[in-house]
Image 1 (spheres, rainbow over the protein chains, first blue to last red):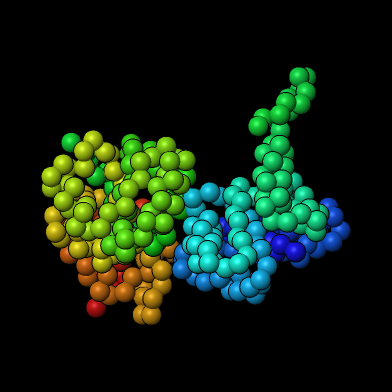
Image 2: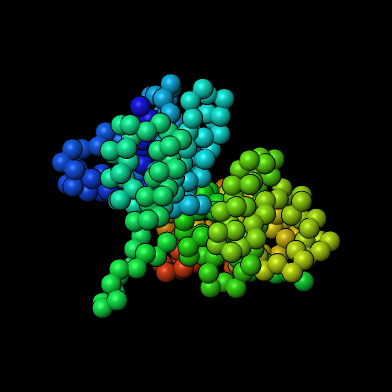
Length: 140
Length: 164
């Protein structure tokens, strides 16, 4: 089964897992890492490396909060480090709760490539505007 | 003729703070990273260049020599530039070699053995302090600031930490 690791600025990663637990009633067995205020790119790179090394034969999906930021940069560097592995690493930026809720269920059945495509769709479709009295309006 | 609006020392280079805060309000249209190691790493160069595009900025990565040549021959074209350095040493070297950085922001320097914090995101060792002192004594305004919303701290605060 694909492994999932969440990497964010500060405590977002632990907070969003608590939210998943609150809604689904089961603590998703996802790894999570936080970039701290005084943390460096190299430290975060090494932490992700440690996480990936724990599953040398498993595909891994890395969720990061912000495209172009340090959690993303550190993830990309790790994906490159693993480019000769048999397994695959993919990254999704802009983590949100609907995406993670869906991931906690879909990871049990979908292989990484399908999971990745599916979660990108779910994430985008979950962003919805609403105004009274016009009602619901999909933004994306 | 291009212009260097700001130099910044930040070990994380382009990241959340730079993309969401510093890229706005300075009137810049480009970010140049000056770093000899990164200039040889085409993969990471592409990553930084494409993430800059999402903020509507032209991003390029130069070695020290490439940056100095680009400035001397073309004054950076028409680019209004923020320059990022990974280390104080690189900033010191290129400024001493003639790159006109009038404002140098210290935004992120990770703690090393024997380092003193000037602001929570910047810890300097004595050699870095001495280099910044030398730049500040020239025509460079040196200041410490993580993001534009936090207070600007001048060399005087650093002086207190390294008072001998």
